[in-house]
Structure formats: structure tokens, C-alpha cells
Image (tube, rainbow over all chains, first blue to last red; front, side, top):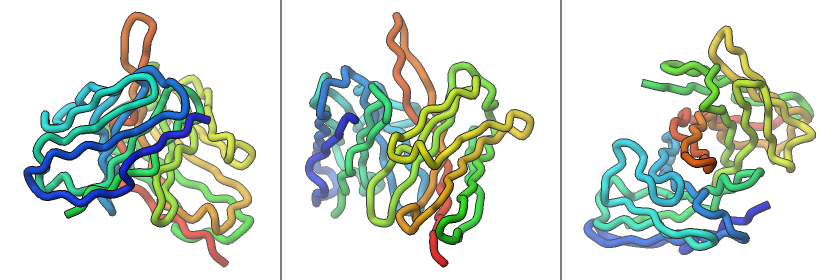
Length: 106
Length: 126
């Protein structure tokens, strides 16, 4: 199985901050990497697919990059609605696996 | 607008079978470019992929659950289901269903879960 490791596990930030979350795969997954945002009690939301493609209606302050084993999610200017947990996911090989999550909090 | 809605019992006794249904509206599950997935989240933990089913009926399961799970389609009612047998307390979780899109070009196709249900909480307890 491909192991996905996110860092940090949690971070404290303020509105307006630039936030970076990293995701490392245990083997190369090319660009088969997705990012999701999850708020408690809500359905997870797709933010970015195939490493860098913004899903529909996702604000442009979200940006994904990387390739191979190292990937990054960047939020350029943190907004109040961005406080949530973020997960990376690889769909390069079965079983699909998620990172453990990064909680972004005030 | 595409919506997915999970349904099923909130409480299941140990050793019994958990059965959940995901009803899809606004889209047809009988589509070559999509598949349908189950994911769960244990209390206080991250997301765990359970398995996928394609319009053809082909399924892909997590190895850790393969011996206990089955996912099926009901095209007449536009829904898909999850059965998990011999449940224990370790199966207590929020269960989500999701639509999986597949996009790309030149022989490279990426899969991603673009629409999710809100989840249903399942507790395994006697």
C-alpha cells in the first residue's frame, strides 16, 4: 500500500496568513494526488485533483503542486471559512489511501 | 445538482451485518465515466477508503476489509449499497458515499471523489 504522510498534523494560523500543507507518498504516485477539505458534520469537499487542478467553484487562493512523492497545498490568504481539516489522497494504485489530515485552526 | 444520501441503521450489534445504502439524485449511476465509492472515518481519525464499484459491476475493495465487504449497484433505483459482515466495535465510524470521476487524456486518467454524501454514523454495540 502507498502510505501518505501529511505535515504538519495541525497548525494555528490567522485570517490573511499564507498556509502550506505538505503530503509525502511512500513511493512515486506521479500526479495522482487529490486534496479535500473537511469540516466536522459536513461532507468532505474536493479542492484539487490530479495535483494541481482546481475543482469547480473552489477559490483561486487554493493551489496544489508537486509530483512523484512530494506535494503541497497552499492557501495564499487564509479566510475564516478555510478553518478545517485537509486531507491528501492518492489514486495511483489500489488501495487508495489518504493522509492522516492536517487541522488548520485559529 | 448531484446529491448523495447515505441511509441505514445507526446501531448494529457485534457479529451482525452492517448494510448501508447511498441514494444518488441528479446523476445516473449507470455511467462509464464514473464509479461509486464508500469511505469511512473512525472517531477522531482520518478518512479510510473502503471500496469502489463501477457501472459494469466491477468492484475494488480495501485489502483490510475485502473478506467482509461487498458493494453492489441497483440501477433501477439509482443507488448503491455496502454490506459489511461480522462487525465489531472497530467498525464504529461515520460512513460516507462518494461519486468518483475519472478524467484525463492521452492514456492518463485521474480519479477523484467530486461529490460526497454528508455521512451516516454507525455504532457497533450490544
